[in-house]
Every structure is written in structure tokens, then in C-alpha cells.
Length: 333
Length: 258
Image (cartoon, rainbow over all chains, first blue to last red; front, side, top):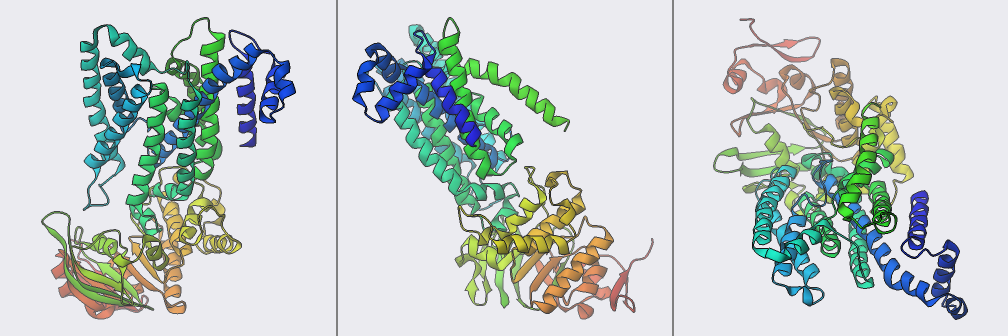
């Protein structure tokens, strides 16, 4: 845990120094120290460009990226726990499709002039989808089948399929705006602001707290509905609370940065090999690892590659092979 | 402690699985439920443990309605060893057994000395100490069932429900676990209700037999009185010979070979 946090801090510093303008590591540490301790003499001694680059451009983007990675990983861990399925990810319930649909409508209606409307529409779309999916799979009579993992996954897939068709239709009638929609869907952290960071951060903090509050109950859910209930877990309540928590975290991430796949699936799965299945350890460590992975990918696309490619593509390209290796190795142990 | 079932019925849709059942269970007795497949044995246990809500009727423990209690309070009174003992994630055996202490450990805190000691002792009596660090989903069916059994004992409840809890254990372990259960009934005044398919084991070990057929009670009483050729014919539709056996010190059932 401490080791991973240290890696993350180092990654943030390294990422700050890299980019179109290279800023030496010492300067960054100095500037950050000066800002935190409000030491004016240090801040005056550094160049205004460096200050602006760090505080207005890089730091918001890097921090947003880190919290999005963190929130997606925690959300993925939650979904894998609730749905008892290591293949579940934050988008299993169709949250991403809902967000994409909302965003496409906003783009199509050309609402993006009013700054927040695309993320706001995406968020509304994601929430609506979530409640439709929960409504579809809910049954008050039979606790064995109501909100069971099969029902949830199936409802998620059905709703997502309808929405995907809707998105295709929107693209079809969008004409010249189609590229805007496509690029939004691929996800990016370019020109993220402090506002984005704070929005995701709030969701992450609340989400992590709720997840940790119910982490032990989540462990017990893996024993099956009957055993979990007999051990004092209020299954229906815990399932709904955690589904909403996980989906809200995913929804805010999608709204801010577009659809970034793979982090939510891969990180908790990989971390489970290290920590074991205990969610009290798995979730916090996944959070840090998720932040690290996404930041790593974003730094590469931003600072190393000659041309910025969509972050979603890069996470899959960098994380995928690592995942394959870990997966294969653990198979034979 | 007295567990009272007052005229309960249960149905998923139209067809009743449990119909107008009335009976009471008293501490210090070992009850067995026997009956053919689909006769509502497991459903009855689910209703008692509060997992399912009856369509009508009440279940009370010492005059308190089970449904009025929170899940956590029920879990301090009733432990259940269910048939689905599959575990989806690779927890270690000692962590899985520790889950039995869940109702007693406050949120965000670690197990106390008492919890650790309890888990340790139960694992020893169930003979699974040597499996402590193994992953539970890599164990055999019988071993896993013993872990689930240990988990239920750790729950430390006055009422213990066993749903074919011994179905995958070898005869040695079955007898060990049964002795353990019997001792806790005699010495700690526990109330045990167990579903069995083996009529001879049910007869040998339990004080009271409850026979279920199509969701209704066909016989309820002292094991040695209830088990007769006629009741077995009525409930299971098989002919048999029932006679007292010196070694088992109970009635045993024999079936014709053709």
C-alpha cells in the first residue's frame, strides 16, 4: 500500500516534468513546496511560464487522470464483488452506454457552447440507465432471483444494446458532428480543469468511504445469497447501495473523460492476485494502482508519443499485455 | 428458548410450497426434517432463518417475530449451513471461517482476541486446522462443507439450522460432526433443526422427527414413534421394514432389494 502510494507520487512528479516543455524535477519540487507553504520568495524565483504550465495545464490534467483511474478501479472492484464475476467492470450495467447516449444528444443539439452541458447530459444519461437496469432486475418476491448477478448483467446488456443502437442512429443523423461524438466516446484528458478534478475527487472520496463501510459485507456476498443473509448481511440493501456507489463513480468518470475501458476490469483483477479476495485490502490498493496505470498511459500519450492518441486505446494497449502475462502465470500456479 | 411456527404458508407464484404449518421447537432438542424431494424442507428452513418471508403466518423466537428483527440480530440467534457452499472468490479457510464472527465484529475493526481464539478452537474441533491457509475453493466438497459447518459454529447461536450439512462428508467426519452437534444440544442447550435424506441417521441422532410431504406436516413427534412402515410408505411411497437396532439404539429402516 505504502509502496504503491510512493510509486504514484513519483509518477505524478515525473509526469509533471514531462511534456512539450521539459521542466527539471528540482524546479517542480521547489514550486510545489513553495505553493504549499505559500512561500512567495520561491514562487517569485521561478519562471512564470513554468508556474502556468504546472498549475493551469499539467496539474489539473494529471490529477483528474489519477482520480478517474482510481475511481474506475474501485468501481470495477465493487462490480466484480457484487456480481460475483471477475469479468464485470464499471460499465457492465450499461452506465457507459447511457453516458455516451446523453453526451451524443448534447453534442448533436450543439449544447456544448454552454460549457458543462456535455458532461451534465452524460451524467444524467448514466444515472437514468442505472435506475432502469435496477428496476428491470428488481423483484420484491424472490430474494434469490431479484438483483441476482445474472439478472443485473442481462438487464445491463439489453439496455446497453438499445442505447448503442440509439447512439448509432444519432451518429447517422449527426453529419459533420459525427467526429466530435466519436472523439468524445474514445475518451481524453486534454484540457481538463480543476473543476473536473474536484468533481471526480468528491465522488471518489464518498464512494471509497461507502465501499469500505460495506467491504466486509461485500466479502460475505461471495458466499452466496443464503449464507450471506444468515450471517447478518442485508443483501438487498447492501447490493443496491454498492451498485449505486459503483455506478456513480463510473458515471462521473465517463462524464468527465469519456469512455475509458479496461482500467476497471484489469486493475482489480490483477490486484486480487496480490491481496487476495478481501475487499478491505483489494479496494484501496486497486484505487492507487488504477490511478497509477491511467496516469502512466496518459503521460505516454501526452508527453512521449509524437501525436496524442485516445487514452482508452492506450490503456488497453499497455495494460492488456501485462494482464495477459499475469493471467497466464497465475493459471499454472 | 422456543421457536414457534404459527400457521405459515409460502408460495413463489400460485402454487404453495409450504402450507399452513404449525409447530414449535424447544431448546435442548435435536430435530430432523425428512421428506421427499421438493417437499419444502429447505424452504421451511429459509422461512425460519428469515431469508424468505412467509405469505401469511408468523415465526417467533420467544415471542419476538423473526421478521421484526434486523438481519444482524437474526444472525446472532440463528446460524444456517446451507446447501450452496460454493464460494466464488479464493478466500483462505481461516478467513472464511472468521466470516462466522461477522455479526459480532463492529465495522472498521479487526477481530478481537476472543474472535481469533474462538475460530481457532472451532477449527480444531472440526478437524480443519491443517487446512487453515489453503484456498477454500481448492478444497474437496466434504472439506469445504466442514469449513462451512465450522463457520456456522463460530456464529455461536442458540439455534442451528443444517440443510443436508453432511451430504458430502465421509462417514467418519459425518459421525464426528454429529457428535459435536449432539453434545452442543445436550450441554449448551442448543436447538438444532436438520434436514436429512438418510432416515437411519436421522432416527439415530435426533430426538424429534418432522415429516413433510407437499409442504404439509404428515408426522411430528418422537423419532421412535414417528418412524414406522406406514409413515414411510405414506411419505416416500416405498415399502420398508422398520425395526429397533441394538447397536444404533434406535429404529432403523431396511429396504427390499427388488
